[in-house]
Image 1 (cartoon, rainbow, N blue to C red):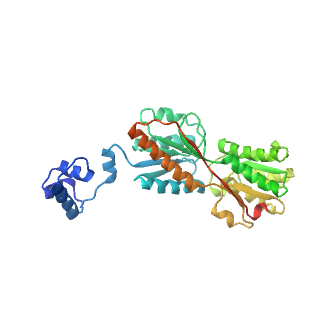
Image 2 (cartoon, one colour; image 1 turned 120 degrees about the horizontal axis):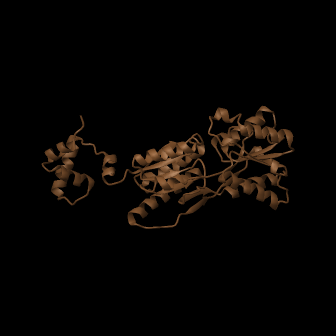
Image 3 (tube, rainbow, N blue to C red; image 1 turned 120 degrees about the vertical axis):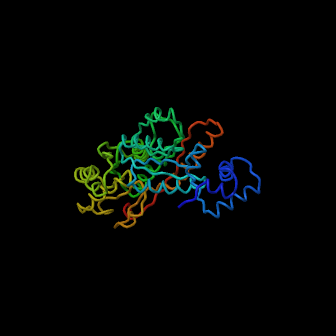
Length: 342
């Protein structure tokens, strides 16, 4: 049976309040009394409840990480960087998956607020984040967004250099002699639009007309990987390679890659002999395919690390009553050229 704080106080011959002051360092206590309390704690093997202690201080030391799609390895890697950074400050993240459903996201935020969360990192399911104004009006806590631009709620934001990454991917394909290059984004949102903008800029700068038929977007549904193989991206890929003279394909993220590459394999379209292929998002499995798939690599752990740093800075701002304008930080991407785009 666990020892109680009353038992510690009795053994140390002090009051419960004195034990609390020693353990929480809330009031100055004589060295002799501190030693008696510490000896009693050690003898009784009294376990301090850090969560309860933090609640008494008005904080939980918990940061909610509300993720639009936790099945995506990209967000798992962000979580790794976030956890490492927050642990330096004595905080822990709580991951919760919105499954690309806005109503689920809103419910997740509501539930975490009810659990006295200290702050949020949010990868939103859609750009509309106006619901936060009402939800945080009575319980204001810092918010940092990652991966997608919010609309209707202004706060700190960490994004990859999406347009530059799209530009680099297409310029690489152009350097290999390709002109009929198609783009498929997983969904129509600000992130995919930025990557498509890089795609278009590379074509225009190279004197290649932008063909609207070559630009496609999927439905953006959160589906198991097995179902992603035969979803809207699969159908877009099949239409492009069947009805248009495309020689290269640039895919907007690793989830869309599943459908696009499955289509090419099943219809025996050789990569890169028949069609060059490159995706946005590097992942371990891209090196396991034959041929290995080229990618624009993001830095998800760095995104998580920076988001954790920014949210901690905002928590310090609250304590110090400091007001600062919201920040937008871009993290560089890098072209990783493999056999699929040669």
